Image (cartoon, rainbow, N blue to C red; front, side, top):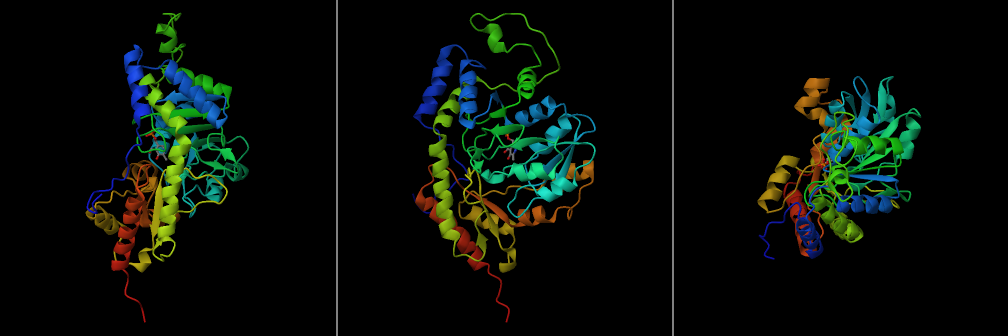
Amino acid sequence: MPDSEPIPFHRPAMGDAEVEAASRVLRSGWLTTGAEAHAFEAELAARIGVRHALALNSATAALHLALDAMGIGDGDEVIVPTYTFTSCGEVCRYVGARPVLVDVGQDYLIDVTAAGTAVTARTRAVMPVHFGGQAVRTDALRAALPADMRIIEDAAHAFPADTNGVPVGRLGDAAAFSFYATKTMTTGGEGGMLATDDDAIAARARQMRLHGISADAWNRYGAGGRWYYEVIDAGFKYNMTDLAAAIGRVQLRRLDELATARAEIAAAYDAAFAGSSVVRAPPRRAGDRHAWHLYTVRIDLDAIVIDRAEVMTRLAGAGIGASVHFIPLHLHPYYQREFGYRRGDMPVAERLYEETVSLPIWPGMTHDQVTRVASTLLGICDAARSPVQV
Ligand SMILES: Cc1ncc(COP(=O)(O)O)c(C=O)c1O
């Protein structure tokens, strides 16, 4: 590959098996939620070791259904780390609850002490985000919170991560997985899963994911199905199609291969940045499995004369697709207008945001591409070094 060839931020790892699975469904006579979606649920539940897995069209849907199934609603509060995607905050608003934002630690994960301090009489749940693919230690979180607090894992980045040998998906009362195009595995662009051991949460979410009706369309139209159904509540349209599930089943079988490919890229980046005093590799805990959805570096802005935006511009100029995760929620106009948050409220998240760059990491990236990304970034930083003070 010539040096000038652009390196995208992400490229999905779609092989012949995914294409064949999709064609099989397209020719089968059944496209929407059916046997494939049910098989995908059973396989994913077995992989994580939970009683229930519900296939959905996004992780956002899973977070929403979890809040609804826990009976969280008007006037309730949900503790959310500010260093996340807006899904976490918006789903609280869907049910009429207030997202109470808290700062994160240097590891990008929810600050347990800040979460404990944010608890009020209205707090019902906390939503730890396994940022980048590193699991939050929810045992420490649980210990800092009242015993009746529900824990909803945002596992959008973190399949197949674990902590102390316990997989993400079993670290709280319910967990939301994402199969969006850039994630460690995808169902072909969009998709999600709600995982839980709680029978009541699963029963309510199963009903609400398809219009609040008493039986899935799958049961109604399939062989032996019935035409009669009852609407029990005003539900949502969150089910996963069989087309998506068939692709997801193949990716689930390949999950360890895909995750290993990402881990190898992360290790190559680690080696490339090990000697740098300006570019710092992302934090991780020894012994825990990291899913490496993101490889985020921190740039020491005191050591260079340009800011992160200029680093991004120069990376783009060199044909490298980088990104920024995340703009903290409390810096967005909506959260400031609606809840009064201001810059300065969560200093750790703000500093992380100013210094962080997400580099390309996807199965199929060649060693040469990884080396080019790393050396380009190091070169940009070297060329912009602050003059030495004497
Ligand atoms: C931390 C986090 N949570 C939730 C989501 C929502 O996932 P989905 O696009 O599947 O709804 C995302 C999306 O990227 C995310 O980054």
